[in-house]
Amino acid sequence: MSHAIAVRPAAPAPAHPPRPGVAAGFRVICHEPVCPDCRSLDITAEDVETGDGITETALICRSCGTAWPMACVADWGGPR
Ligand SMILES: [Zn+2]
Image 1 (cartoon, helix red, strand yellow):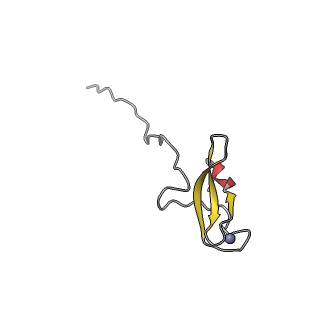
Image 2 (cartoon, helix red, strand yellow):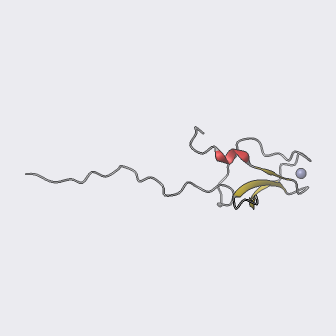
Image 3 (tube, helix red, strand yellow):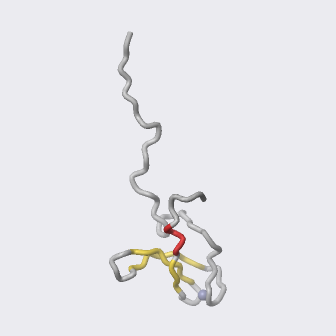
């Protein structure tokens, strides 16, 4: 008896990496998200355009409105 068995990868690779920031229930925290101005912990993340056609995730303080870039989102691929 001979059966031809097609070999398939055990787990298909995801087509796209998870998109940080806007996905519901998805959180990326590299450092404690504290507002540099007022020390508030009420921080939200939002996608903003940098002006070069690139969308970047920024952290925004809900208390005073200060926004700063979430640079650590570029660290995909490293150990968590
Ligand atoms: Zn603030």
